[in-house]
Image 1 (cartoon, rainbow, N blue to C red):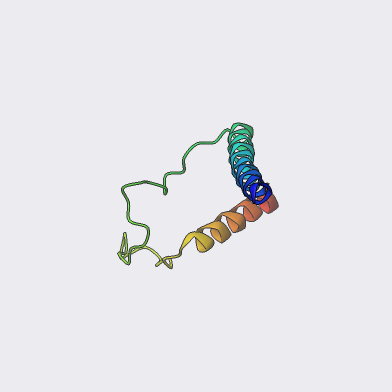
Image 2: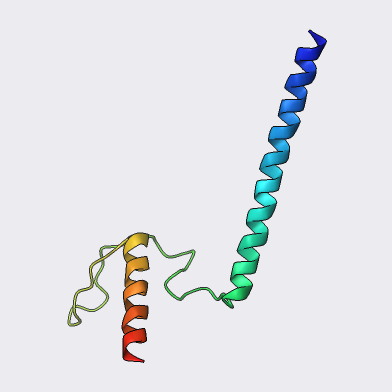
Length: 87
C-alpha cells in the first residue's frame, strides 16, 4: 500500500513539474519572439474596444467586411504579400 501511495505522489510531482516546465519554456519563447520582432501593439488591438462590431466607420468608404481574428490574419498576410510584390 505504501508503494502505491509513493507512486501516486511521484506521479503528481512529475505532472506538476511538467506543467511548470511547459509554462516557463512558453514564456521564454514568447519573450524572445517579441524581442526579435521588436513587438509593438497594433492600433486595432485595444483592450477597451469590443471584439466584434457591426458599425460602419464611414458610409461613403468602401464597405469592409467585419472579420474575426482569422480574417485579420489573412488580411495582414495579403497586405504583406502585396508589399513584397510591389517592392
